[in-house]
Image 1 (tube, protein in one colour):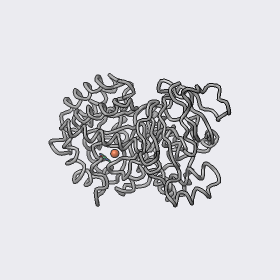
Image 2 (cartoon, rainbow, N blue to C red):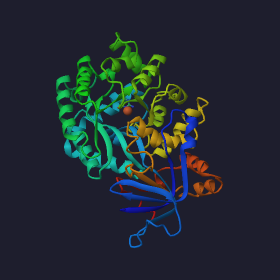
Image 3 (cartoon, rainbow, N blue to C red):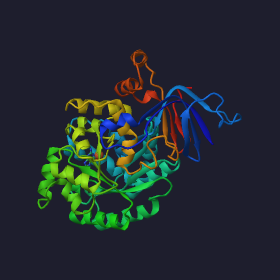
Image 4 (cartoon, protein in one colour):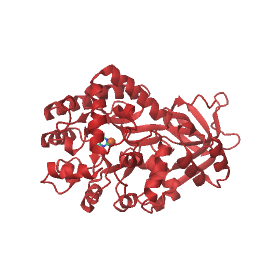
Length: 436
Ligand code: GUN
Ligand code: FE
C-alpha cells in the first residue's frame, strides 16, 4: 500500500432509489483503518490491535479525532464566476446581463483564465470538494486553463466550453459551426485524458439557436460517452422567455429532449419549476438534476422539490453554482438545502444530505463506480474533517449523541474552517496549515 489512514470514517455504501434506504447503507467506523494503493481504496476496516497488513516501517497516519468522508461532489459550478460571487440585487436574467457576461468576456485571455482556474481548484480543495461538473466560458482558452490545472493533481473533473450563439453580447457569442468545431477539438484533446471528462455545454435554451442545439446533438452522437451540462427551469421569467423563443415545444425540457440532449450523463442545473411531463421525461431518459440551494435562494429563483425528485426517481446531485451560489463549501450548501426542504415540510436528515453530496452526486454524474464512498477499488478521493474547531461547535458537538447528530451539527455550523485535509487520487492535495 501507499498510504494507511487511521480515524473515524463515514460513507454510504450503495446507491438508493428511496431516501428511506439510505440509513441502511450508511457505515460509520469510529476507529478505522483505510489502505490506499495506486490512487485507489484497497480496504477499510475497523482498527484491530496488531494490524497484520500494516508495514511497521511505513506505519499509518493517525487522524483519530477527525472524521473522514468521501470527497464532496459539486454537481454544478461556474469557475469563471468565482470573482463575482455575491453580486448584489438581481434575479437571473438581469444578473446574467449586468454581472455575469462582462466577467465571462475576460476568459479569452489564457493567462487570466489560468490564474482564475488555479484559484478555483484551490477553492474546491480547501472546501473538501474533489470532483465537480464545471461551466467554463465560450472561449476554448478557458477550458484549456481549467483542465490543465485539474490534470496537475489528477482530479476527477468534468467541464466544457459554453456554447452560445444568441441573446448575449457579441464578444460572448459565436456561430453554431464555430461552437461545434471548437467543442469537437476540445473533446478530442481532453475527454478521458486521465480522470478528466468533457461536458457538451450549451448555456441554456435562451442563448441557443436551433442550429446550436443541433450542433450539440451532433457532438453527442459522435462522442456518446461525453456529458451534457446545461440549465433548466430556474426562474419564471426565463421559462416565459423559453416559451416565446421555442413556441413549438411542449415545455422547457422538450427543447433539449428534441435535440436528444437528455439521457444518461445529462445534467440539468436547477429544475425548480418543472411540469409533471418534465419530471417524467427526466426519469424516462435517465437524466439528472443539480440542486443548487444557495444559488436558488440568492437569486430568488425558488425552492427545489426534493420530495418530487425522489418520487420521480430522478438522480440528483448538489451544486454550489458559484457565482450565483454564495459558497464553495458543501457543508454550508447542505445547511441551506436543509432550509429549502424545511420550507416545504421535507425533513432532510444528515445521512441523506451527505449522500447527495457524495455517492448520490457521483451517481448523478454516472461516476458511482469510480467515486463516492470507500468501497475497495474506488478512487481514493476523501476529505478529513475536524467537526469541532469553534467554541460553539465544541459546545454543540459535546451534546451530540451519535454520528448523525454530529453530521447534522456540521451541516448547520460547519464551513471551510472544518476542512483539515483533502485527498485526491490517493494523495494529500491540500492541507489546512492551521491544523498541524
Ligand atoms: N442560466 C444561464 N446561465 C446561467 C448562469 O451562469 N448561472 C445560473 N445560475 N443560471 C444560468
Ligand atoms: Fe449555473
